[in-house]
Length: 79
Image (cartoon, one colour):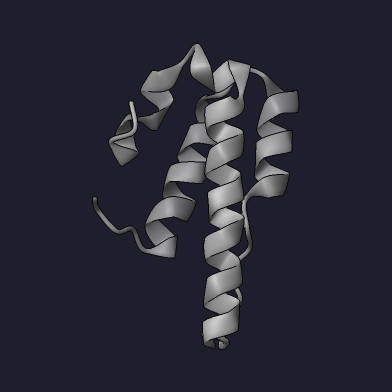
C-alpha cells in the first residue's frame, strides 16, 4: 500500500470537493477532514491526525454520494 503526505491528501480533498455538486455533502466531508497543525509533529499529534484521517476515509466510503461516484477516489487509487 502507498503512503501519502498530508499535503497530497489535502490537495485530493480540495479537488474532490470542487467536483461535488452536492454542496451539503461537500460541507459535511469538509468538516471531517483534519486540519494541519503547524510546528507540532509530536507522536501524539501525528497519531491523532492518523486517526482523524481514518475517520475521514470511513466517512468517504460510507457516503452514498461518493459510492455512486467512485471515480472521485481515482487520484488515491481507491476506485
